[in-house]
Amino acid sequence: MGRGTFIRLLLAAVLAVASITDGAHAQNLEVGPRPSDGPPSQFPGNFPPRDGGSPSNNRHNNKAIWYVVGGTAAVIVGTIIGVQVFKPDPPPRIDRSPDIPPLQPISLPPPGQTPPGKGLGKQGNQGNQGNQGNQANQGGPAALRNGFNLPPLGETRFVQDEVMLDIPSSVPTATLDAIAARHRMTRLETQTFRITGRTLHRWRLDAGTTVPDMIRVLAREQQIAGGQPLYLFDLAQDMSGSTASLVNGDQYAPEKLGLTEAHRLATGNRVLVAVIDSGVDASHPDLADAVVANLDAANDNAPHAHGTGMAGAIAAHRSMLGTAPRVGLLTVRAFSVRPNSADGTTFNIIKGLDWAVERGARVINMSFAGPSDPRLRDALARVAKRGVVLVAAAGNAGPQSPPLFPAADPNVIAVTATDVDDKLFSGANRGNHIAVAAPGVDILAPSTGGTYQFTTGTSVASAQVSGVVALLLERNPSLTPADVRRILTRTAKAIGPRGGERDYGSGLVDAHQAVSSARSSGATAAAAAKTKTK
Image (cartoon, rainbow, N blue to C red; front, side, top):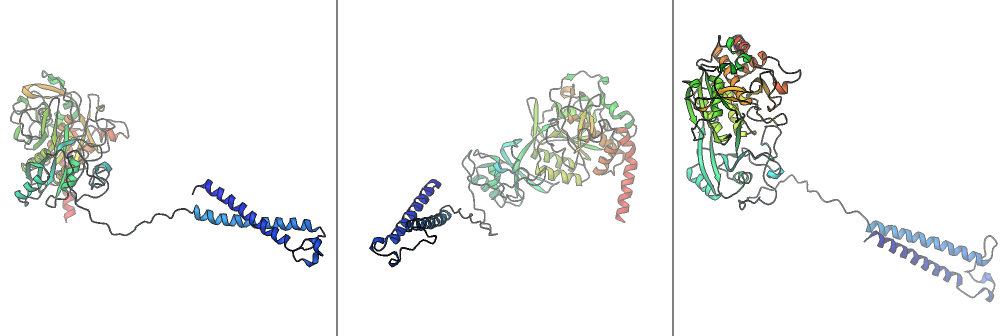
């Protein structure tokens, strides 16, 4: 009932009650004969006025009293009606039962469609922890099984028609074929990685289903232990650097890093450094006999300028000077080349890590950057526990970019880039995870076909620091990854403003000071470890 209707009814009720009371009062006053028919005392309805007034005045007073009584009654009745009519609705009942109904089976949606209703994604944790980024448009807050990871909200840096699955090697091939057929998928590649103990698979989506939708569906297959996107990583370097004729004077990095003095103490001899990158031109004169072994994880062994430049920044030893000219290189081609760029997948990068560790790498350089990746994070942690030093480029996405990986991983030494004046490369990422800086603007490096290039970015800075790490390990093979990080940061030269750690880390790497302190730092660390075990 509307408020206006109620007011009209209330007024009608007041008038009706008033009319009734008025009639009743009139009947009471006019009962019996008129005053002329007899003395007033003979008629009980006619009472003499108390104030000595006339009977007519007394009648009007009584009538007013009846009006008041009737109006009051009307108000009371109206109030009761109003309370009943406008009484608020009771609050909805909330079922607080702790019982949660079991998840119902879901079927594969038609191509290009999203499953109806709420999905099964687990809300992502902050930073790079947990089941990152499983936001509302990725399926909502309901939990996936452990091991299944959806891409973060807005993340597109992954292969759009493939997923990477974690399936125990004990699952029969016939079962895998049946699962793939049921979900309209093609099995592409399978490999068991010793470093993590996982058997990982690449499967292609043939029905047009999105990667997040397929991960949700495959989480219902109990034989599958985990699944995630096949993330893509970019080489952290300006790919437009021009080739140049070699002029030794064009190298300013050796002087900035103090390499002449450092090489009197160590040159990286007998230390294996892995370079996970694009293809390396092992025939380049400055890399003669430097490449010990090569893995072509991307199935395309064509040499590429980026991989060749990173290898040369570490090991060049003929016409130009690398930071560790006597190291042995384990080169991994994990990046497929496209015009002016290259990208690598999680699967191929983990292949490279596994292969390099099995062949005895002490240092692994990763001059690439991309999203947080659960399977890669697991692999990096396992590699670090084996005593391998991990070094990565901070990334070239600029000061507003969120942290990029693997540099932002806590097991990795993140390197940023500076120029000839020790100023920060403007395109470098910032963040509290930055450990140190190294020259990375207009750096002379080898290129394909025996040529040279000037290259800019955090990639080449990372490669140079990897070479310095090799010098430390030659000087003291017992150094742990934590020892190496501590030496690099403690001996770095402060070059930025006070409070600029997010930009420069601890400062510019000083190879001579670092190598000079490696022996004593290692002895101190070994003594501390020996004391702890007693």
